[in-house]
Image (cartoon, rainbow, N blue to C red; front, top):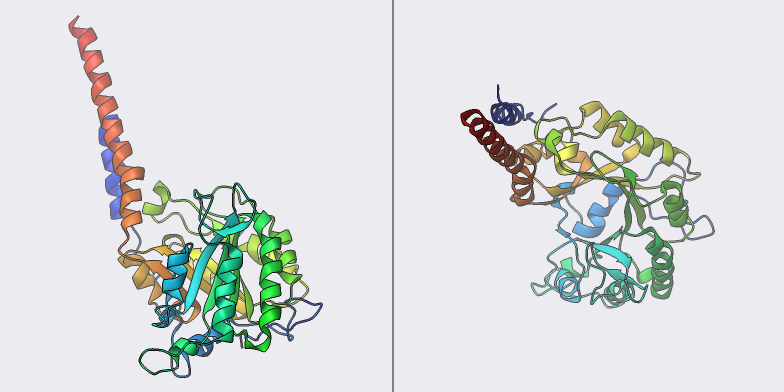
Length: 345
């Protein structure tokens, strides 16, 4: 079998072997203990009545504004129409000024500083909005998910956030999730964060309604398409062992990539959701990921912050599979032609 034929055969195997799916959060108390709270595990699911009001609600009902990194995006996400329940935004240090701003790499600057971002939530807390339809939905607090992209931004941002919350007092009811990829995960680059340092910094501040959103760096490669790219026991052990070193119980949601958590053995997923911990599933999702999220053993534990259709997955499939096969076929054709020319000469 020639190189091109072998490549096409492996591509067919990848497609054929895609697996099918199946395989109360208490507010932290102020004080010197930082995020130390009442004894026992805390549960991020308690944000549901805070964000969505009383009644039956599922974790997947929470609506997200993802990468809210500009003044215009923040204004839209926090408007009186109340289009979302949780505002996710990325934080790094601006290249020229060194101040924390809302931006996602490769961007290095933004028209929205972290200070201005937080000030908007202070305004909402002190002056709750009435909604256009006369309901109380717009007056309910919005969640903040702060996604740190640079470990150097953590400490100054927590200082700014603590000062804003202190200024607001009891009026501050916004849940706060502190997120970072502090572990190295499947196909991912080495994390920039020291996990213990990040946890220590988060515990050193006194914030109400706070939780940790902890993730792994990840990458997308050929193993993903053949169902061999889930989080491993080593990834899970590393995270749980790090968390076990903490002195105080902390509300935790695991930030996991949709295509990768779907390929993770069910026993490992169950380990992540022990002690009332949840998943926050992010990234592009196809039909397989959506079916997995609807499984009865998954849905009660998973916040869903995904985008559809899965344009990124389709593009990556081409980049990781179709393009290399095409390139290989062209190289094979070129080398075969040269060999034939030598024989004829």
